[in-house]
Length: 100
Image 1 (cartoon, rainbow, N blue to C red):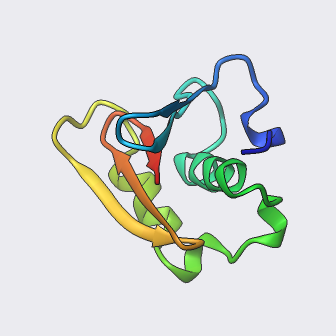
Image 2 (tube, one colour):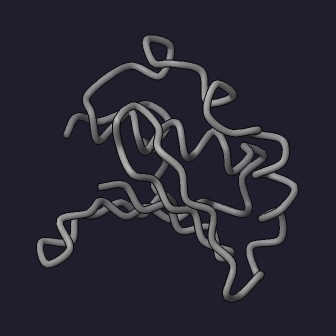
């Protein structure tokens, strides 16, 4: 895993779960940056690529729909799962991004 400028803010929480072998990050709801940008940043950090070198997120999921569906960060019990850059990605209603 490499660092990414998208995950450099001190409010970002990023970690690796050795039991599930997945990376976890929490979207910063106080940021002006949308959840979809956090998703791209987390995947970029996991695979060691620059976000600009990756396939556009809109090629696999509608980023606006993802942002709208999970916009409040308080939607319990909802999650969106998709494949991006050959990684399984899950985004929860609380803004947790899980990659693995």
